[in-house]
View (cartoon, rainbow, N blue to C red):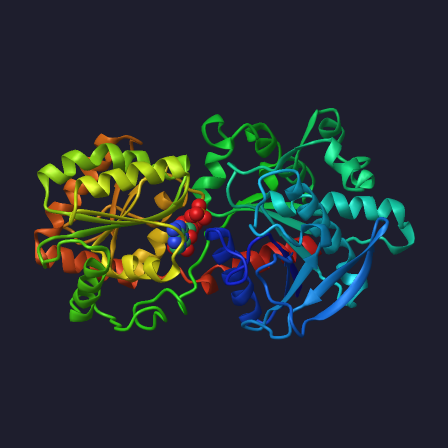
Length: 474
Ligand code: ADP
């Protein structure tokens, strides 16, 4: 099948979080399974286009450039949609109306794709609100040019209902996209603001989200973020498919960021990596002192405040040390810096985005905490499992689908899972994991269970292929 992936983020070119890893992992696995996959992303200033071939197409009144990167990446061709007036916007998200322009242009580029590069996709797979207007842009195109109508089916994947892309209706006229305004669903055009994600939910041929539990959760008020009624309306078209892991970059056997590698729970190399981590971030290190790692966006969703609230008691009661890495909300960053300076050698916090340190923390820690209030899929708990770093997670979304409570008697389970989104819930889970840690045989068994779990993308491809196949009628 010929599949066009449309997304704001795609690793390694543009990444702020899991969306980039998910779209890259999915694309590569589809390509390895024999599909012809092309990816369309915005051209951000940081991406080098030297030597890239440029294609021109008409977007309303303007002539627009689409760059094709010279090298395929893991069999996948990447195209970049260039908007000259955004060439100085350094960040992936400007956080204002310019994002509407960037992603309206991306939707138009998806529509113009087949005629511009002479490659007609069988399916267009859109990701998140950034690509949610593609079905509407296709409709506008078909009305303007009925003799060149596009009938490509569309899939919209909902990676996180917390981000919807809401803009005043005036952005369409402001940026020359009145044609899209005129074909918005009627319920939408009556509003003062346009919610890109809501439009996508109403108009895509099929919807997916990134775990079966999240697919159920988003039909409720608690998780639907105001769009639950629309999801319920379209629930027959919604499938929950877990994200996978790209084990070529996240596996202790071959992690490109690690100097030492390992493949068994009892391997001495894991302790050597733990020592390197502790030395690098300034933590106390010993075999009987567990390192608890955290790598996260600093956002309310991620429940970092639970860690902040639980830490004083955990530091008093246990000998654990905490290695934290995060970027995002500066207020949360400030609180974590204060905790670290109050507890030297026990709490380390690095603020910023650091891929290498993320690998070191996930490999070098004994436990890894993901206390999210909601988590569509979550990747860091999946990475941790492979490294024998035991995940301690809250029972929500993909965390609930992938982490199962360890039972030292039967030897089943791969982590520790708590229900209540409060400090007591987290404290209970850390204390429980500490008890297992104190029993070396149980801990080795638990690590073995974790390391043997397989969440590779390849296992997911048949589910996507079946969905695409249903849409194109094969
Ligand atoms: P989300 O997409 O909601 O941020 P996920 O768990 O799905 O959460 O994916 C997070 C991804 O971003 C992982 O690959 C994780 O390692 C990475 N990540 C998050 N914060 C940082 C950071 N500060 N530095 C490096 N990598 C980070």
